[in-house]
Amino acid sequence: MLSMKEAIENYVEGCVGKVDCPAYKLFMKAILAGMMIAFGASASNVAAHAVTNVGLSRLVAGCVFPVGLMMVVLLGAELFTGDCLMAMGNAEGACTILDLIKFLFVVYVGNFVGSILLAVVNVISGQLNYSAGLLGAYTIKVAMGKVNMSFGQALCSGILCNILVCAAVLMAMCARDIVGKLFACFFTIMLFVVAGYEHCIANMYYIPAGLIAARNQNYVQVAMDTYGYTADQLASLNLYGFFVKNLVPVTIGNIIGGAVLGLILLY
Image (tube, rainbow, N blue to C red; front, side, top):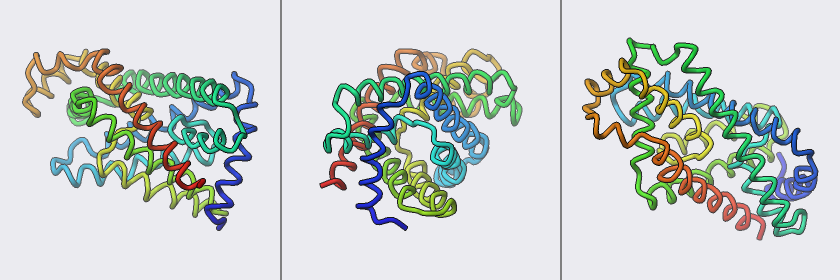
């Protein structure tokens, strides 16, 4: 394996190539990454939707979700949360702050497109009909939990999440073989899922899928019967809750967590 110092040096050198990547190629890589994370999120919902024990449900989801980051790492896709480590490149002069902002903006939008695309196609595929609509109801439940967090909760959860995600990315860079890279991703990402931290790109799947599911009366009825939601409570699952109450604070938290971890390890 490479030492962490060697991995960081390689990452900083790679920042030059990242910011020089043509925008259309970067955008396509970002769409791919959004889809890969959404695949992990989708499958983790399927795995956990009928497990009633909260701890066990998170553990089951945590064993499935990491496959998304594994695919991102091995396919060379661009994921916003991992790319927050590029704060190291800026600190070392490998890219300007303007280059960094432009890069992260393109990646963020691309991740959003990929995640939304997967959410829409997933719903059309009929996946949420599993267990007589219980998966659809569970999808609503997951989204409800995310849009009803306070700003402080979402921010701090985002910080903690991306400390672990960026740790996984750097540890994977230390590994010289595929198995080592996969193990570095698996256990660290499993940790953040079991802990219940907030990942802005994953939420670009979880919440839109919940928003779409909430338009299906069968899923809504199952959610009311199973989880005790009322119509007034379900009204909080809306675009304002998605963008303002969740995505904004979680994204800020993810940026802080990734940048701080990178700068701590750099110095």
